[in-house]
View 1 (cartoon, rainbow, N blue to C red):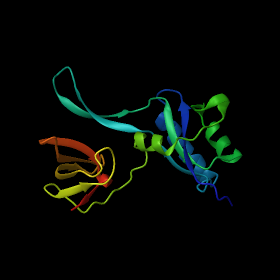
View 2: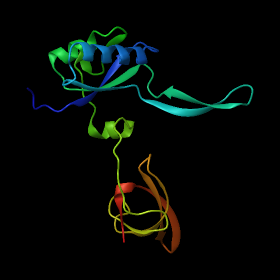
View 3: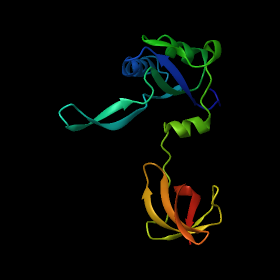
View 4: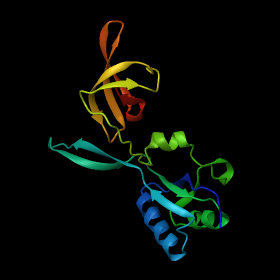
Length: 174
């Protein structure tokens, strides 16, 4: 059919309608058999801890971008029409209703697509930093956060032990 790759697009919705737009679009994709054009639909959320007036804290899921839904799709007239005509959807983000896909860098920053990085080192191991501004430095892994793709490494800089945060794939074991 098409050799085109699916890209992430931002869809503007009425505030508070994000989940409704997502579920309606999922139903439309299923009913019209558009699975090959519209791959994924996400409402970016984060879990935060809120402290209420009674000093009790509770975990709450909050929308990161109220009024927006992110859709991974191959842009065709049919897929554009399907998304554009969902109730609660006001259009795509882009100049004069021409949808502009997110760049790979934007997708990475938004954390929409989880990239799993497998590393063969763990806290306490000595690593060689192979990317970023500290490339070539050697340090000791202090802690790792797999979910956030980060590692804290202690490197010796100007005779001092300095903790630095790097991405997991920016270091290799010695």
